[in-house]
Amino acid sequence: MKIIIRPMEQGDIDDIVKVENNSFSTPWSREAFTKELSNPMALYLCVVYEEHVIGYAGLWKIYDEGHITNVAILSTFRGHGISKLLMKDMIEMSIENNINRLTLEVRESNLVALNLYTKLGFENCGKRPKYYSNPTEDAIIMWKELGNEAS
Figure 1 (tube, rainbow, N blue to C red):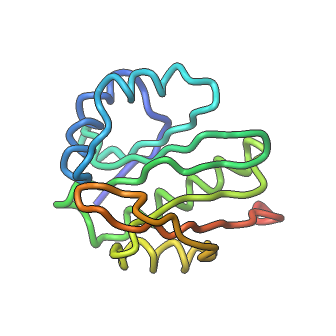
Figure 2 (figure 1 turned 90 degrees about the vertical axis):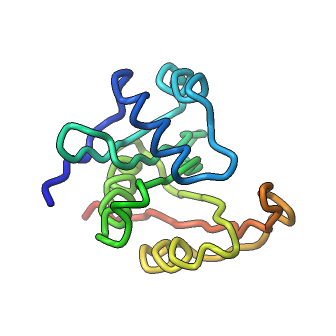
């Protein structure tokens, strides 16, 4: 499978919304993604396969920290290591943008994502009770120090 990971563009929004609706019980709106493209703190990457976006990830840069806002892959493409490649590119992009630490929240029941983030060096640093809705669920807070990963 030949995929390309590149920065998200305005023309990607239709596919991004499809991925979002396929991935989350409380998806972000088209308007939210359109606003993110003009947000100077937002950095987004998308995964393209056969000229269609099949996944994406984004973060907000706040000083020297990055808060990963979302990571999603179309369900038909999961299980092929695409999320791992995407997250590695997110880490590289963070280093290039002088981000020293990354954080994210993940549903407590999302064991596949928890396992991936742990393998990538994120550490469980606590919980946000009832953070998610539909269904209500706690979030695991994870942090990763980037340090000298670029070397």
